[in-house]
Image (tube, rainbow, N blue to C red):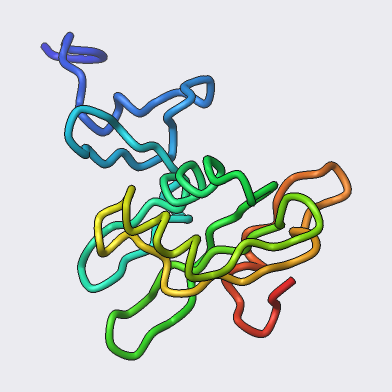
Length: 142
């Protein structure tokens, strides 16, 4: 008579615990490094997966950028495209062309954001967390 556990684990039962830092995240292998981001933030552009965290990490390396947040906007041709919202460092904002060239040097062509929007501040909750859902809504740009 079989009853209870048989000693086998069903693959679906082996879900990650809430303590797992990668739970609910996507991983994309690019050369020898992994890029990790939340699945709901993933941008699907022309069949390619773009993790906004990778774009943000690259742009944070630019000296003219204080803060950056990746978002997405619908596109008739590619489905969605990545857009970034930049808070400039200092009094002068860097030129959009300079930031685009900076991205082209460091990212694959399909990962380069299609637009860069300069903002004074990013939308945050009262506890200081970024409100990404506002970045996904073209009418709700900060």
